[in-house]
Length: 234
Image 1 (cartoon, rainbow, N blue to C red):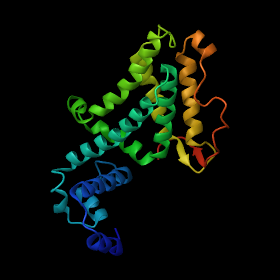
Image 2 (image 1 turned 120 degrees about the vertical axis):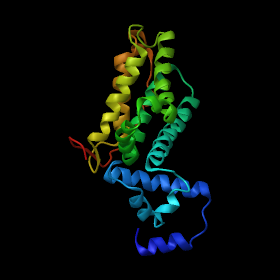
Image 3 (image 1 turned 180 degrees about the horizontal axis):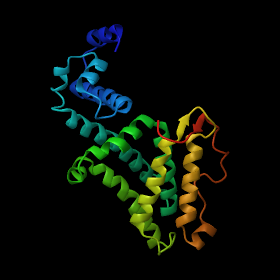
Image 4 (image 1 turned 90 degrees about the horizontal axis):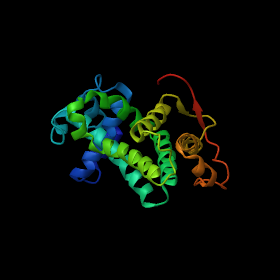
């Protein structure tokens, strides 16, 4: 943080503890993205915030605890998006289409958060991951339960393993962050719609494919964007 920004922070309106904590999480996410969790330090984060390193300990006892909070915050926002989608209602295929499409749009629109979450959650042991990232499991279960609901109603083939299908869809969708880049021709909503269509085409029963109408049917083509694809990691 430059001197002017630090001065503005110091002299601006006094933030509440929740506001300061949220700011720390935003800055920590950017630092973890830029340097990686292992290379980043609390001093790096404090410098970006324009505060003393000791001040961070008022909110987080360690860098590990800060990472846990960052990851939990990211997936919590994802769950809020999922709940909003489910609140729209609809049949299982419609809900699944919206879940997949929205997952890709959110992923492409929040590459920093996505990269940090997918990379750095590996730092949490499997034993602790369920407690710290409970929303991550809830997120996955939303896809699994929607597929099971589709099977019960005959919209999704009975021979599909719901858990395997959900994890496969999320795994392939998550890989998008390795090649998606702002600056080209593929818009996030186009990517989301294509992934959603492929998901439905691979899971839906023959009868459902004949009669079901996808949520974006009849709309104008997804808007052109400035998003390019490239191979390899950042």
